[in-house]
Length: 238
Image 1 (cartoon, rainbow, N blue to C red):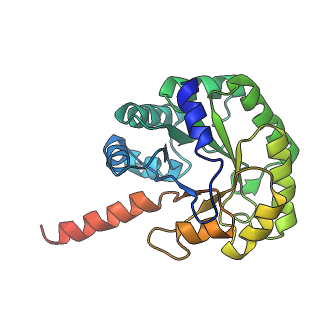
Image 2: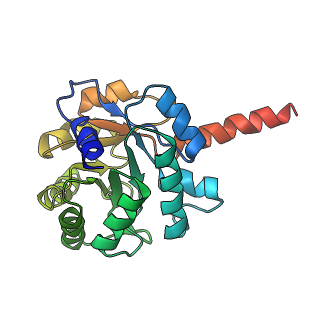
C-alpha cells in the first residue's frame, strides 16, 4: 500500500501547465473498471456519487456503507483509489486512517464544513495533522476548502486556510467551486498541489483549468449524474 500511495503522490508533482492530473470519480466497481480500462492512472471517489448509487442523499450515507463501497471499488481495479470521506464521519484520526487503509484507499478527501457551516480552520488543521500522524506516508491527504461553497469569496480567506492545512500535513488543497478566474491568484498563494472542480463536458476544460493553475481535476458526482441522465434516455426507448 505504501508503494501505491507513493505512486499516487508522485502523479501530483512535476506536471506542466495545462496538463493536470485528471481523476474520474467512480461510484461503484463497474464504473471504476470503465475508467481504469480507459487508461486513467488513478481514481477519486465522489461521496455524493457513491451516496446516490447506494440510495442515499448526499451527506446521509452511513460510514460503514461508504467504506464498504470504497473497498469494492479499490478491489475492482489495479490503479490507486482515493476516497472522499466527507468530514471524516466523526471518527478519530486513527480510526479513520485504519478504515481507509482496510478499504484499500491510498488517499482521502476531507472537507472543512459540516451542517452547512465552515468549521474552525485551526481545529480542522489539528484534525488533519492527526490524520497525517496516523497515516504517515500511507495516505495522500486532500484537504477540501469550502469557503466558496459557503459564500466566502475573498481569496485571502481560502489562502489562509490552505496555509494552515498544508502546514498540518495536507498533500493537496481543494478550494471547491472557486471560480476559474480566481485560480491564478490561489495558485500563487498556495504551496503545493491545488485541486479544481470541473463540470462534465463543460467549459473551462481540464486542460484550461490546468493552465490557470490547477494541479489535479476532479468532477464530484458529475460523471455519476451524467450516466444516470444517459440511462434515463435509454429507458425512453424501452
